[in-house]
Length: 143
Image (cartoon, rainbow, N blue to C red; front, side, top):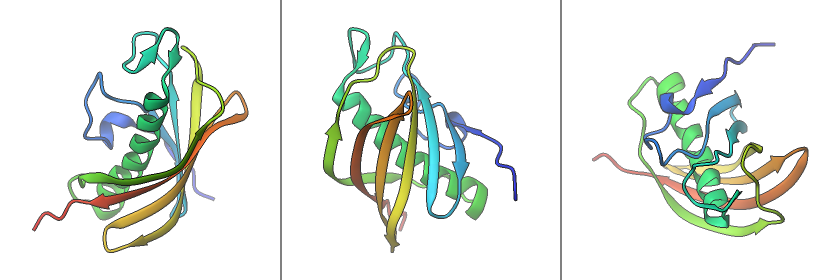
């Protein structure tokens, strides 16, 4: 069994503060990546003391981007690849996370081919699944 050392978002994301919606990757394998995010009081996309649905969706998209960044930097040893959001399907949000909540998000890879990835993403908070979606991303062709 190997031990995974958490990776900070600044090491795997191209997004820069204040537009960062993950803190760290806490685990990675070929099929599943887990990230965490603590909802800040002064963050973007806040509606009072809750993260808006758009903020939750951005967190999910950045969770997928963090997976791509991790693979680029630590597995392929290439510059972080630019990904584009292709599609979001079946988005549901049962409750909005509040300031100080820690989101734990699983990105489960469903399919990957020719730079296109499809994943099921589930966001949990305080042991309860609060959001889910299926997200498709496309890696930008550098050619």
